Image 1 (cartoon, rainbow, N blue to C red):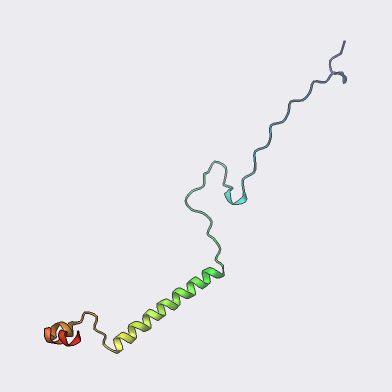
Image 2 (cartoon, rainbow, N blue to C red; image 1 turned 135 degrees about the vertical axis):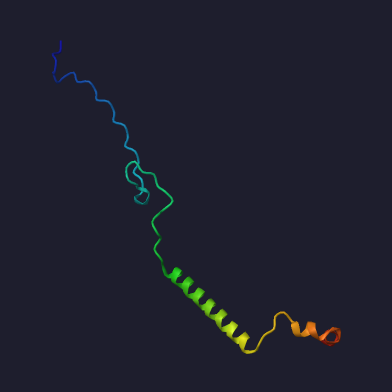
Length: 93
């Protein structure tokens, strides 16, 4: 007969439950809080800088095109042709 606490008849220990997988660092949130709409701002790289430079170049080109059109008094509504009458239109065609 075995006495209490004897070494020869130990009951097997129950298996431990597996640990849950750790969340990635970016997805960690404070305890009790869920992630919201606001997230960490992405860092800019060389492509972001190139995009900004191309935007600046396009805006400068639009400015120069506007100044050039003002210099030559461009008429986009064609008022001079409409006021001239049908004879002027026939000459153009």
